[in-house]
Every structure is written in C-alpha cells, then in structure tokens.
Length: 195
Ligand code: SF4
Ligand code: SF4
Image (cartoon, rainbow, N blue to C red; front, side, top):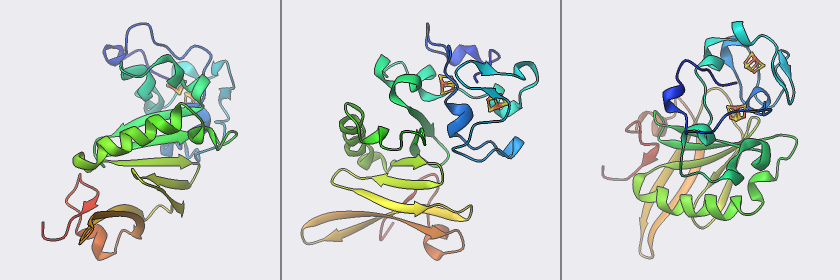
C-alpha cells in the first residue's frame, strides 16, 4: 500500500512485498472503505490493482513496521497479523488486528511486548489501543479493558485517580460532547484531577 514518494521514512530493506493487510484492516475515509473489509481494489496477497491511481491516503501510508527500526522481523504484518501505528495527534499507539485472526494480539511474543509498552506508556500518558474492526480494547499495565464498538463520535479517555493505595487508571469511551472529552488537554488523552 505504501507510496514511493516518501521513501525517506522507510527503514532500509523493508517493503510491503506481498502483504496487503492494511488494505483489509484499516478504514479509508477517502474511498469510504470501512475497517476490517478488503478493499474492492485489492488483489489480496498480491497488491493494489489501481496502484498508479490509488488514493492519496494510500500513497502516503506506511505502517509502523516499515518506519520503526526497533521493531523486529516478527512484527512484519504478514507474520504478526498486526499493524502498528503511532498516532501523534492523539498520543496513542494503535494496534490494528486482522479480523480473520482477532486473537492475534493475545498471542506471544506480541502480547507480552504490548504489555511492556503499556508500562512504558504510562509516564508519557500514551494510550495503547487495540482495534479489531470497530471494536476496541485499551491495554493498561495491569489489565485490558473492553471498550466495545467505537462510534464516530466516541472519544477514548484515560482517567487517572489518586487513591490511598496509589494512582488508579481507567480507560473509557465517552461521547465527544461529554465534558470529560472537552476537558482533555490534547494531545494528551488523559484526565488528571487538578491539572
Ligand atoms: S500493512 Fe504495512 S507492510 Fe503490509 S501492505 Fe500495509 S504498509 Fe505494507
Ligand atoms: S486503493 Fe489500493 S492501496 Fe488503497 S486500500 Fe485499496 S487496494 Fe489498498
């Protein structure tokens, strides 16, 4: 799916090859393609049948494996069935799962690695969100939270609460007109009392 216009971002030696996972897993607003369904222009396992005139969104897209040099070969989407993306605007790591293998994120070595990232993410107030089509899970160091189906108007909020036993985190989805969504100090998706 990736473009050759912005190849400077590519990790040397990494390319899509026969992978077409993002053409199934991701939603593409430009062509009204919903997440979790093969794009009608995709020859699965081969490539884009309209490559020269594919949408701008597709031309500009590189998945995390192609641009994050610290990811090992096991994270190749064709192997892991996972697509990693860092969403800087929302301060969020998104893990998009092949809907044909919805438990791929729970397999090893991926699950343990995602949990390690969930620990590292806390001081940065970064969310780790797993997406299987419209369904979302939030990963926290000590548990995973099923957020159910995400609507277009839903906002994912992390709430930080001071308790006598220490800081407790919770992740929930709220409507974008909910005061908690309005109170977020973007790009941080966290609500911290007193800040
Ligand atoms: S998921 Fe990544 S490797 Fe696979 S086709 Fe998309 S951009 Fe290429
Ligand atoms: S237009 Fe081509 S690159 Fe874009 S999602 Fe469809 S098959 Fe993939």
